Length: 127
Length: 274
Image: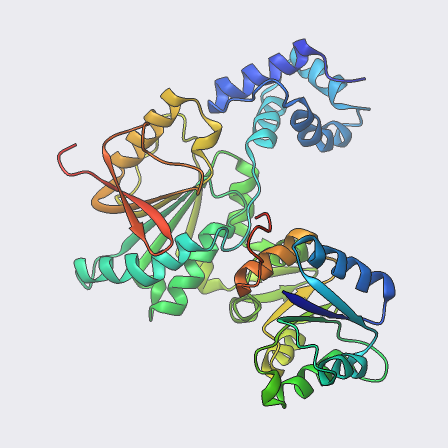
């Protein structure tokens, strides 16, 4: 399975990618929403996108809306991974088309639990 | 200072006497990890000093804290998923069909820890049933007084709500309360929490239609497992459903249960006439 990790923090991209690779994912990274869309436009369509909210150029919410506006990317599951933790923000992200929401700080177990909920935990990844 | 064999054995015996939970040799690391916060809160340098102090001069509060620290286990929302899918897809419709319109269903979350399992059930019922709080009651019990208080409070940290709680359910059933998240009052009204030691005679409760006793039996020796299953059965309706942890079974432990497959999960039902 493939996952695109979008975050303007290189350290955070590495952490999230490392966790997903530990579960067996092949990953690519992008530093903001526009870069993320470029990856999809290039034909690399992942099963999962983990996207931060606050980023330069294009934020996570704009990215979610842009992905949902393109029927060709309907199969992509989007999980926001962000420090934005207000009730209303989670509601907005879900309304825009995100499937799940993980609030920073998080543990690898939290990512694993969410993937299990989404049916995106690869076979053999330890529960 | 590291934990001596004598101190570890004393802790093992205390925990076994009070809760029937078996701490195998080699679990010294667990004792160290779980008791360190207590030792530090008392201004002691390490666990060994704390255990030595309590061993030579036992007091009820310290011994209770040791037992509770070693009997509190990991929990998360929708843990293992399938037993909850089974509840909403199969068990609940069957029970509602079998019970009268004014009969209230009773569900028991045994060894509820900080309450995630009980509130997971409450959320499922609230989403599946109109006026769920008037039709179902959930009893949540744990050996730990602290865990019972946490369940009653229905407050969870950011890290806790990250663990397996679907975001749509978070926004539907919780509100922010400072840095924490608080369960909606209608769910809290559905859940009654109380202290209960499964290894001792149980208080008068039930009769239960569904019992979640998951990831509990693995900590006990065979005679205790048998005694617990017998006591649980006595508190269940004859057509009730018991859910155990994925690594647990009644097979080879107590033959008065029938194992049934429910979707991707297994449940156990009291055998008629057993």
